[in-house]
Length: 398
Image (cartoon, rainbow, N blue to C red; front, top):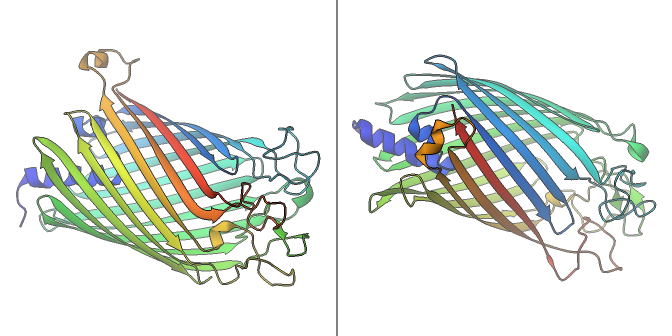
């Protein structure tokens, strides 16, 4: 039995470090604060995305906390280098609509989420409502979760449910397509302290999706070069099983942890995937840490995926997410606290973090002038797809 409160506290810290970057606010017991975040994403297809976001949290009582998340996306549109007047991702007319995809090159999105969290003597419950809106897509998502610590707080059982109500409203040539989609996701977890410095967990996630499950701006290019409408089944059931293991340790007096997560996914579209995610968090000083990450992913194709469609198939999609591929992501993140004297002013931040993740996927380009754009990989056929995500954040304690 792990009866030491110090051991349990250290285990909780190790678990938190493995799930998310260490947050000095959490370590210092801050009850009220503001997180300001910024993300920039790019990929070899010419897509970019600027995402500023804020997260506000306030303790309402000894057991209740309120949280508000606000996010804004400035994103390049979904259109390809197809259509009229060279409009689209590689074109010069940002505000116009592409004649084939119906998408503009640039658009704005916003999302909001309000959450209430209850925590008391090892019992935690939360509920939230998420809303996202843009010119051709809207989504609502209520979610609920809870967990219970027992066995001298060495064992945790948890569960949750999230529901998504989405409405696709395509524009221009695709007006009238799209439709509504509903997703129900149910999760069950168990975590067990193995030693004072190690934790093992198991998570099962079942998802039921129904309605419009395609992408209205993804016309299929047939082997004859014609564009026809994508068509996917209107039901999908999937399940994912994940195992986690966290090992904490000290290098000198500095705390560190290594987390390994393995995940297996399959659905009734016959798509199967496996993921391995390894992360190392290490404190260099009392308030400065780094995170190293390596994530490998591999999936088999869905039953309807084909390299070339004749055009008479019942189900068809050019979306590369339904095809066989492998991917590797490597990342580095560093964070620290500002001098204690800064805490005397509410206008100065208390902590910062900065990071970058770089991914490579083994899908080659199709811009050789011969092959149709089956998957819209808009780069040379001797190159692989790559993407990068830059992240930065500032934190304020009130």
